[in-house]
Image (cartoon, rainbow over all chains, first blue to last red; front, side):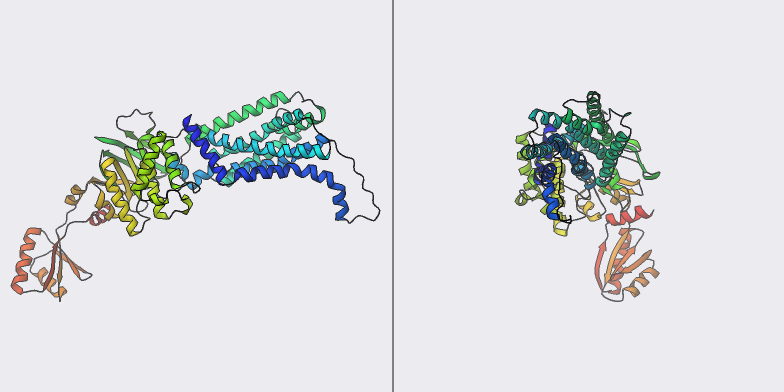
Length: 259
Length: 302
């Protein structure tokens, strides 16, 4: 356990030194506040951009507050996922590619500690960034439109966070497989896209797919109740995370560390 | 006492056999050079010994250890091109690696200061490794390999990338290391091996073509060879020597004649007598010890 904390602390220090602790939260905040603000100012934006004939009356129904928070989550589903894959794809693959893993792993380092410490480090960064981002979105929705009960926000936050954790774990899993961060990134993005597309088009067959979590979060925000499939979906996603982590450790153990 | 036994070690990459079954035993407290031309399989062998690569077949056994024991705590390894976390300082890296190896906090601190001093980068200990020169990285690499006081230290080409001064210093460092632990290092520079090593392992095309102590090898490959230099008319003089049957063959190269003879003692007497008798302008007379380079060439060519 002592070794695990040494590895974990190193991840924390590295993320501080290369400013991940700065730019990732900022990116999540920007993505989070984008939709509430643009939605609120849309009439003015259209007005000032011009191009509309004189006398046009712009009338837009104000969308309900939960829909706007959901728009932010929709953005995380795209840009957030992209950022997560980008910051995670080199965590292990990069160390192996550069060769520093060759120095670290000839020391008596447990492979499971090595992988889970990196996973936990990434997870902490993502959850903190995602929390401040969604909190900013919730705040702007509150002051510009209508306040959503904080309890609802917290529930939505934790629910959708499961999907982001799942994406991160998929990326860690591919890290154990491939030596090149680019390939890891591609494989992870491809997996997420395929999973989302298939779950979206065959939603009646795959209602337990982790990719449904975003949709279920939206449903909860507007109706205050989760669909029945939410519980099995959560269990499946958490099970998937555990399975992928164990898989990553087993694969990594078998891999040759040097080229 | 032996530290490690290697039995019939083989390694193939995509059906190409790189290491074709090698056997050797390393004795405790010795300095062993793993010699061979580029592509002989030195790095692959070291990687298999360190556990970074899995042998296709054969075994590597540490003395006195169960088969399932994690050997990594007993070995130190320096890759050919060591890469570190560039954002760490030299001291942070050593402390990190030491802690990973299970050393106590106080021990790590003491040992880090000691090693930074020993390898000569104490001045730069608080600088980011990204700003280190190649030589400093090599020294840091050696320090991280020995921080946890391993029983066997393996260094892959520790001096090849260094300038002459750095090379000298690292070789002196190896001399010091020898007193503490068993050192195995690969190189293709023969002088380095000759200078610091007790034992030699010759690797060529994935096979162990020769091994033994330095003295054994010298004796085995000892040639009856004398170097001669005459002030002038080398060619003529040597021709006459040859006609008189004083020597078997000769080769003039760079103003120096290398003479092959049957028996060193007889040849010396005969040549000196001839020189006195004919009053030849002899400038240099040297009975040549076989250098490792000669052994190397012989081994590789045979």
